[in-house]
Amino acid sequence: MMRLPKFKYLRPKNVAEACRMLAGEGPTTAVVAGGTDLYPNMKRRHQMPKTLIGLRHLPELKGFDGDRVGAGEFLSDLERSPRLRAAYPGLWTAVHSISTPVLRNMGTIGGNVCLDTRCTYYNQNYEWRRGINFCMKCDGTTCWVAPSSDLCLAINSSDTAPVLCAMKARFRLLSAEGERVVEAKEFYQKDGIRYLRKRPDELLTDIFLPPADGASTTLGLLRAGTYLKLRRRGAFDFPVLGAAVCLWFDGRTVREAQIFLNAVSMSPLEVTEAQNAVIGSDLNDDAVSRAAEAAFVAAKPMDNADFHLHWRKEMARQFVRKALAELRPR
Image (cartoon, rainbow, N blue to C red; front, side, top):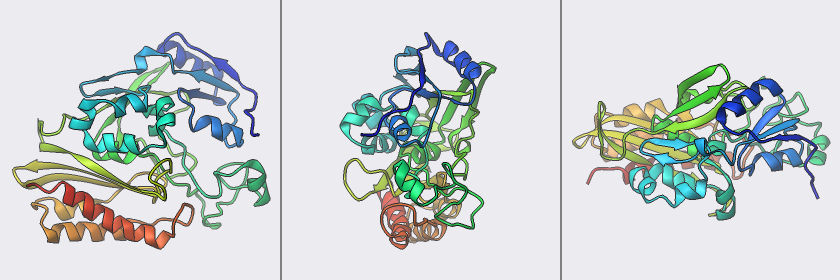
């Protein structure tokens, strides 16, 4: 049986106190709400925080009000929200696809947004990792995916991350020094170890969504988008490929497009060439084919997840084609 290491647990009264605790306890501190990813990582000795700050009970981090989602909102509550399903179907699909019902009862959307990167050589028990002399992400110095790489190539496998990037969502980060709001796609970076542009003393508190499906914006009419996920089993598994698409229309013409792939890089991958292929079109077959081909070219999966990497690359083409077909005006 794998057991948790010893740690100190703090229970703040509010978010402000949680931020003060983060600043005071130092870099060996982590926050926890559901713990569905953190606790298993601690048991496998991937992460060894000396202090945990519990956030599960804080009402300030809850709620889905208009275009604001609290980072501490439980995934199962979002899944049961008729408004989320109707207004933001792509995000709802992503939430619905995460893990199992039991774990969605515990996990939060903020936890999924900040989900640790994954890799075949990292997500193993301590003895297995010691047998290969560990890896760059934890206790070692070599990335076994590509031993000559200076960067850890563990992949981003959050289901909500690519959708929120495609939706142009924004994240509010709070610390004892103040707050800042960042674009979702600027929150992630291509480094399997330092995969978030977030300081250790910062806390993700809010997620701001764009106007709901069909609402008029400066970009035109938003079609809230869609999300497709590849995994071996239809339940529980992390994605080994994700495709998130969000489009803005002016009549039947695509005025703006956001297309992101996931689980093929250390961060959600924006496919600019695929976006350009459909902008100005009515999603005709030629435009969709060019976008799908651009996704195939951009996708460069590594051999550190389930399924053969060449097949995952081909599926990037098929997933983008299918996602755009779903959003085609009728």
